[in-house]
Image 1 (cartoon, rainbow, N blue to C red):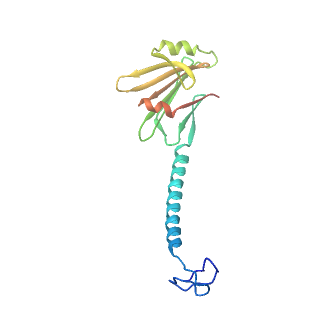
Image 2 (cartoon, rainbow, N blue to C red; image 1 turned 135 degrees about the horizontal axis):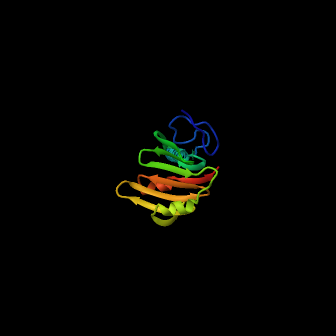
Image 3 (tube, one colour; image 1 turned 30 degrees about the vertical axis):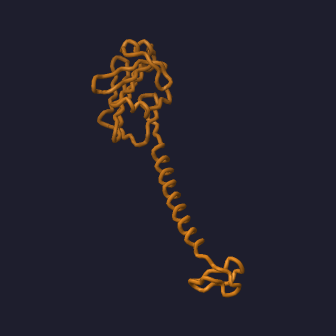
Length: 179
């Protein structure tokens, strides 16, 4: 393999220490530096690409609809079809759906009285719990002994309940609103 002299540009013989044309000492250290630098740059780029890919994949969300209210969940949550429940009882419509991933379970329920309206804040208050604010709404926080947590809040004529198996799962839920 041949290289060129950094001073005169003459082609060098393989493993040459001096340029045959101008006599310049030819150091091979720049090759070692370049090779080490190239490897480090490639490693950093691969790590960066993996990080960006993971961040992009993990930041994707899905829009889910329970009755006429939309919520946002991370894309790794899978709908639990056996937990979907829609009931009509004396004009009251109640819908609930569940999702899970490797760590948590989330169930979202929406109850409303079609056409008649319901005082959703009063209903949420009657269910009890600690007054608090979550998802940008004022509502009531409930803690079930060793069984999970819930946040109940009013949204127009709907009463929404977000139940989670672990308190940290609340961070995975976003409320978009009624459609």
